[in-house]
Length: 228
Length: 344
Image (cartoon, rainbow over all chains, first blue to last red; front, side):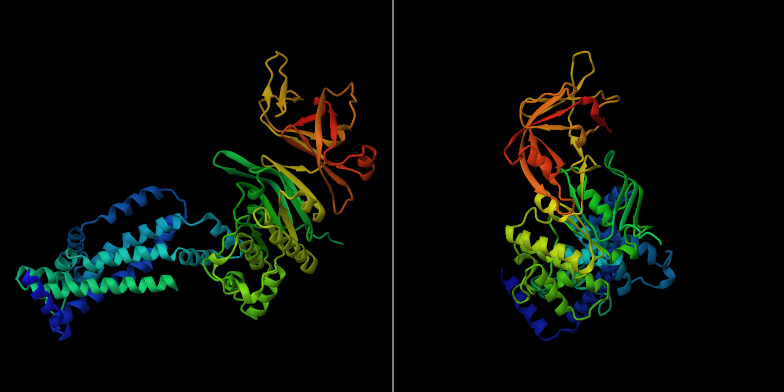
């Protein structure tokens, strides 16, 4: 039990004293997760809206595919992205292997289906009178898109939190695509895995605390927005 | 001199939900600046017709002309001009002020919003200071309905469609909604199309009344719809009947190809208050006057007669009602021949 308490105390010490290795991992994590979420939201919100709002041939099959991608193992994504961006892969010339961009790419693949699926499910449950109301007030297609998304913003926020949680806590992609390079592509999760395997329990715990704190901050922010 | 086109002209319009036809209109014209009352039982096609008129959806077939030109959903010609208030309005998850200004904002019209919201709210009896900054969930059903109407009135629409606007609101809200809607025609010449079960109001305010049953239009007071189901008598004579709730039966003409809609024109009905008979009439149905409404425009008395679970509306002249001394509650007899019932 003592080593857990010692680890906790050391974790606080590392954080207070701005340990460079710890903060490098925090910075890398925030950069890749933010980039992945930004791309996922920009692409996923309109795609999810289209999937939930419109009826078209093949919709059911696309939904099944998106739902399947929700359960995609992170190591599988890591493997696919690795194959794509390694020197022998089709995107090898871009030199993305062992870079933060490469990790962000993989995490986007992870987050995108979540954003699409939750947006589609939320939009599908929109009150049918909403569209009628918007049309009757003179809204065009663009206004209908944005107003519908705004009306179901709380449901979509839940999707964003879920996706962010998945991106923030994944290890497989960061490890395989990023290579866990200290001061470069080492993220919080890969650092925790490494430090714990080395017996550096306190370092791992410090990073774990940061991870929990980030998740807490995100939820507090969303809760505040919800009240607004 | 060119004739002004009607606000709407519907030609051969049909609409389906799945395989089921819910609307079939050969021709319907609604003049500009008129008030049209739309009546019919639940599920008759009123709301579908209003949605088509609001250009919220396309008909499965046929053409809807607006101001003489074929139009379609999201056309710029109709988006700013036609608006619909539904029975249970959807308020956006915002304040009352933001709900009322939504339509103006998407038109990029941001001039003098506060004053215009003030006027719109006044017109539906909502005090600006008390309600403008309330959230959507802080309103009663009647207040929400009035906010929805104010959000349309602020747009000064060319056409205002009202789908059961007073069906689920309190008496005060209903009165305010009626006054505000009628003021729109008076002040801006707005064309009003109102679907309502409030017959007294409809007959009082509307220029024309249209009955709708199973998606087909009928001239109110002149055509009486005998609603199904119809039963084929097993007497070898291929006779069809309509069984009324009180045990009376209406004899119908033969229906080749199965049950359709049976329609009787009012001039083919003889109304009697005593036990009179008519040799030519094989139908002698007893009923009771349920209500009488003076129509605003034609000075006729729309007389609603209850016949064993079915209601019949007859447009009578004041002289006719006086001669028969009709009044609500009075027993009457309807005499008509099955040969004069049309099957459509």
